[in-house]
Length: 176
Image (cartoon, rainbow, N blue to C red):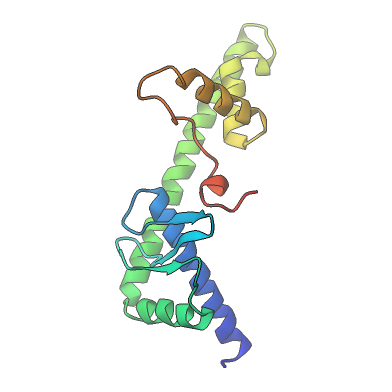
């Protein structure tokens, strides 16, 4: 067996590959993932690098030994160049920057609504749109009410079923 650093590195790589399988499936990309259904199904581990469709499906009922999965992931990752890793990191950084900018624009809308309320002599939090948007950005429980209402209202609308967002933790099976 390797030393503790090798084992923890291997575990981290495998977890990254499992997370990548879920993440890529969530975005409708090539690696797929099915949750176990009555003890059946597959767990998909995938390359965490952008643009790489490598993945390995492991049956839930007869999982491969962890050492074998670790070896598969390591063998695949060793086939990538440093440039592949740097390119993927840069893409992640760009996506994070775009997300922060989008978040800042949404907060500008909240600020605008709050300032308009103050200008009209009302409380800053009196605007319901600003309150809903603020709850969505902060992730408070009130946003769950918005999701529930979106789901309820979409029930009778053709093509609108399932349009309410689902928290990432629920989609990826990391929330109870």
